[in-house]
Image (cartoon, rainbow, N blue to C red; front, side, top):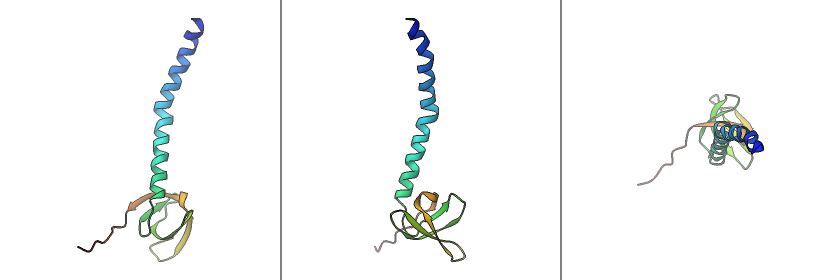
Length: 93
């Protein structure tokens, strides 16, 4: 019984850490991976370094970003922080 009383606070602390720190970080990481896997040519993006531009070309691990002044830079796919505007598909109706 003494061992149970000693372990109980440690278990409680682990559960609190899991729900306050570990689980939210896993959700954020999964959302970022989904965003990076759904990148398409024409999407407006922001890199981790703060560069704003649009995707000019994309392959499995790298993307080519076209900035406002027309220069093209190559980045790893993991360097994309967020998509600011998704390319809108044109439909012929």
